[in-house]
Image (cartoon, helix red, strand yellow):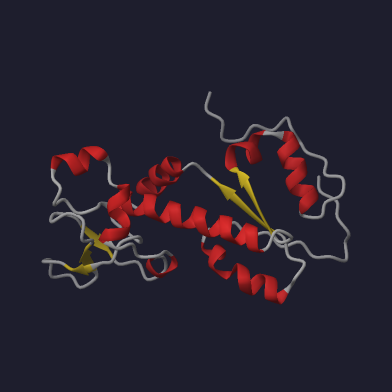
Length: 184
């Protein structure tokens, strides 16, 4: 149950793409509060690898050998082709080989130093850029941007209360008996 001054609208959006627009949000409303919830990088990588099979929004696509013009080579392996995605490809930065290489696994680098970075390496590079930009924004706009650890934000009542108070909810009442999406 959240109670807040009814004359002040509350808008909540869950998106990683919004980080690029923080400057504009603050210019439009200098009182805006932006919560950035950071998740461990390897969890982000695993999640995106699972939900983006056949697509790669994090590396530049180039024409492959296949005849279908909507199917492009993702640049990481000779045998991997991905579908172009008009919605999501432009929503994420395209990582160069140089940006991805530091995030390749040691096993990949040791097995073949000519090996091109894969999607997981690009995702790790994306995570690092995202984390870095979030930190810069929170330092530049401390009254507008605050960063929380995902595990703490989801599981620690004191962190949840702090987050909600910072967003302007004076006396948040949290329902702590709900346990959604918990595996038994």
